Image 1 (cartoon, rainbow, N blue to C red):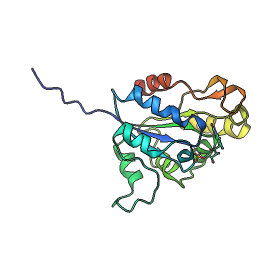
Image 2 (cartoon, rainbow, N blue to C red):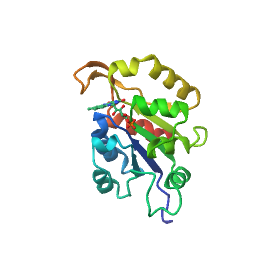
Image 3 (tube, protein in one colour):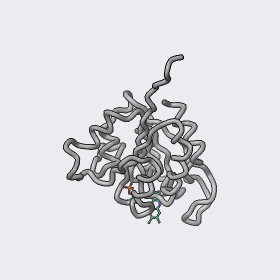
Image 4 (cartoon, rainbow, N blue to C red):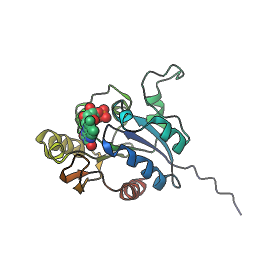
Length: 184
Ligand SMILES: Cc1cc2nc3c(=O)[nH]c(=O)nc-3n(C[C@H](O)[C@H](O)[C@H](O)COP(=O)(O)O)c2cc1C
């Protein structure tokens, strides 16, 4: 009998500054049996959940800054080479705007720009207030990104943390995991 030695896929999760950031800890629970995960965080994401949580859950260093004195090579380039799928969740209106215009000024946007959508799947799972989601600027950014081959996991309609009811709630972690794993 041959020994199974299949390499596990590597998913990098870019976490952004949304109240839904804590749900990524739950999402990891649904991914961990199928893939190794590394988390990168925007500075705003770090206002919502600590890097230590993701370090403990994933067992991998969390990328919180582009400026890490222990990295001999740019970490975002290494990660972009290594990863099998880049998931941005929760994706803020801001990160969609940055991705659509090519801005790279912190770890998550820099990772997005360092990957090409026709080489590896890049998936956005947005979460935001309904007005932000329906804003013509966000609509245009989503359309641009979809036309360029980026994948989207549509937000749900329901109760939002800001007190609103409407479209913009992060899709359930289980649903995100299912769709992401199907793309690997
Ligand atoms: C309490 C709170 C909750 C927020 N939730 C969201 C959200 O769910 N989605 C969003 O797009 N922006 C949200 N924002 C605004 C973003 O944090 C802000 O636009 C920030 O600049 C995003 O930075 P990032 O995209 O680099 O993470 C929230 C802000 C606050 C103060």
